[in-house]
Image (cartoon, rainbow, N blue to C red; front, side, top):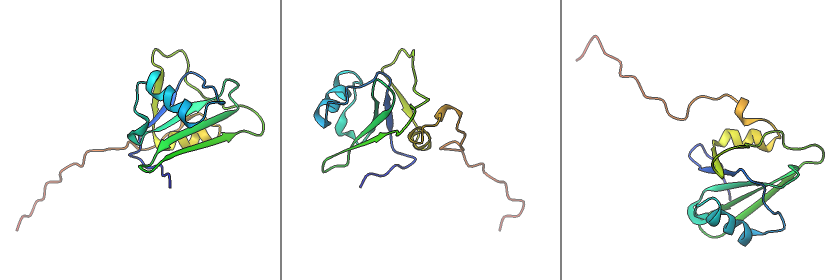
Length: 125
């Protein structure tokens, strides 16, 4: 089963992908264009040229998951563009917002890691 946790690494491909490509074709894109290992457990997110569909590719240790969401109407409003990099990293909650056709850049959440402040105790026994 594929799970999205706060620790899951999620990479979003900036350039549109050819959705005629299956798992092998998207693995090729991961290696050649994103310079990432598709067997690493990272979730890779791709969009078609029209912006009406996204595909997620992930390896779970036994095999690949390939998930697709196609909107019944409209397009995915958010997609990073004009970036010098071929990919951008998303947090798990940002991917969930993206999959609901929202803008993850405008979503707000607590930081993943916060330092625990040491409290000084007045009475020590």
